[in-house]
Each structure stands twice: as C-alpha cells, then as structure tokens.
Amino acid sequence: MRSLWTLVERLCGVLAVLALFALVILPFTQVVMRDAFDAPVPGLEEATRWGLIGLVYLALPLLVSTNEQIRFGEVVDLLPRRGRTLLERLLLLVAVAVLVVLVDAAVGSALKNASNRTPMLNIPFRLFIAPMVIGLGLTALGALYFALRRAPPPVAPPEAGFLDREPEL
Image (spheres, rainbow, N blue to C red):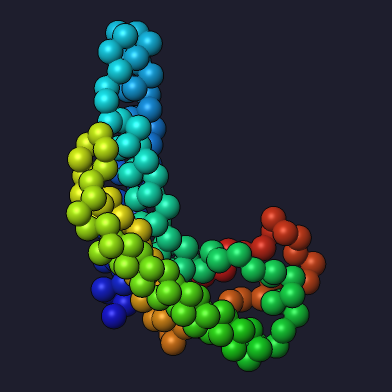
C-alpha cells in the first residue's frame, strides 16, 4: 500500500505542478496576445479556471501525506503521546467522513449536469469537475490510510519557537 500511495503522491505532484504552470503561462499568454497583438485568445480564462481547480484539488492529497493540516501545535504538543495519537486518528477519520460527503456531492453534481458543457472550450462538465472528484477521493483514501497507519506527530522541544519546530511528517 505504501508504494501505491507513493505513486499517487508523485502523480498528484506532477499534475499539480502542470496546473501551476498553466496558471502562470495561460494568463501571461492572454495578456500578451490581447495587449501586444490586439488578438485575445478565446477560452484561455476558462482553461485557467480549470488549471486552478486542478491545482487545488490534485495537491490536496499531498497535504494529508505530508501531515500539513492546520492544527494548534502548541496544544497538541502538551498532550501525552497516546493522546496525540488518538487525536490525530480521530481528526483524520472526521476528515474522511467530510471528504466522503464532498465526493458524493461532487459526483451528484457531475451526474446532474452530465449533459452540460463549458461555454467557450466546450469541455464536458464531467471532465471539468473530474480533478475535484479525483482529488477529494484520493484525499479521503489517504486520510483513511494514514488514520490507520501513521505514528503520532513528534513533539517539539518546549524551548523551540514557532519557526524552530521540525516539520511534522
């Protein structure tokens, strides 16, 4: 399972970097074409929007795998080791429940709007929403996997400041 999750991490990382590249290059291209050549390219805003959706949702599983969720480290560090373990597992399981609801809503929306297409590029709505469904689904699977497998986060020494803390893996 670990090697499969590593493959998922790498694939999501590459796709998120490509989406980030699209978020930089597409608006730049549109500005240059519109201002320098007075020939805007129709649909680039829509493609940029899809790149943003891809970036956000395909990078989401990476947050779970690197344990970068938002938390109050100062409070968590005060808990005993067993308390930290139980809290982290409980939070991950709650995240799984919320993510499953979101995946269900996204799939329902995709099925409800299956015949719709985007206005400019004519992308089927199912394809347009696919990065969201895939990202949320993979994040739910990753959170479940780590809820059952992950060791508790390490405790920072009491004298460590916010910026001196070791990253939580």
